[in-house]
Image 1: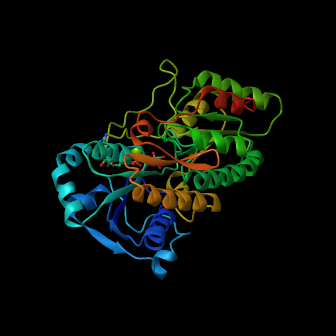
Image 2: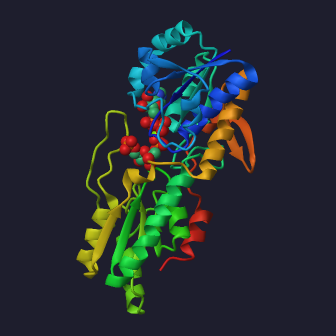
Image 3: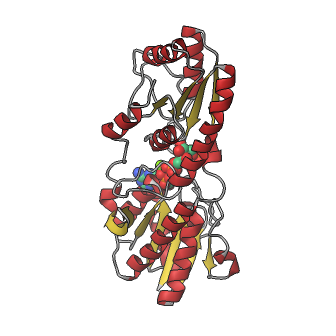
Length: 343
Ligand SMILES: Nc1ncnc2c1ncn2[C@@H]1O[C@H](COP(=O)(O)OP(=O)(O)O)[C@@H](O)[C@H]1O
Ligand SMILES: O=P(O)(O)OC[C@H]1O[C@](O)(COP(=O)(O)O)[C@@H](O)[C@@H]1O
Ligand SMILES: [Mg+2]
């Protein structure tokens, strides 16, 4: 059998571990070959690929961040109108099953290809941890560790200056990184996209903390957090060519508003892509490797139109259609757990 693979959307620590596991399992367990398409779906549109073998190079990528295949975004309309070209590329390269490794966007495209008759097995990746039907995606644990260490460090400098520190972490639609790093690092408030915030309430919480003699206030803000409509207005950033909302820096704008309203000194840190780069944690290497092995098994077992998923401690197969039906956002009870430490 000949397996095609690609990595799509934002890069994520652990992608290389999946690639390595697919190549190893295909060769060793099934005597199959693997073709890696370059730069996400673009590689399939332009027939850019490389034959992957389990040599020293592929063996050594386990701990390396990013993706050796490259990743890119393609406007969904262009992708849809390129279906014939994609199918031609798959035929020309003799691909029996395609394994796209990506987030909700890449997997939506994978589902749509699967519906058009292409044999597909999806592998979920994202630091945001917002793919439905799987308990965790690889990349999340690494991003969480980086965010937690950064917030730990902010505590001491904030205390020394009696400052309010806002730290903005990634999380476009779902606040998992913010929620967990806030819990792990003892934040005094965490703002996430699922729970619109009221600036007046945030200011009152900050004031109360300093009035009772505490020396600092740490607030974790997910990049997609939004104020309640009558509370404050964020600058508009429009939408990029791939349909993603452009953020304008919620933490910076909230910080300015806190200073204006209550006169406390605020500093803002935006962690950005530091959260996505570098070597994956041991947890992410293991999860990514298990996803790669199980996706290869599914491809050979004819389990098409499925996605590998972590359920408890087991790797299971779920329907790709169900997995991309909605995003896994932070439920109220999880936010309530974190809120027990607010203020
Ligand atoms: N609704 C869609 N239909 C078809 N293709 C899509 C769709 N959404 C996204 N894609 C394709 O998947 C790519 C990756 O999606 P994106 O949301 O950027 O990353 P991720 O896979 O990490 O969520 C997009 O650039 C686009 O080519
Ligand atoms: O800067 P980029 O590459 O456009 O991506 C930024 C986005 O990608 C992420 O890091 C991960 O999202 P995906 O895994 O869905 O691509 C988001 O948290 C962030 O909003
Ligand atoms: Mg996406």
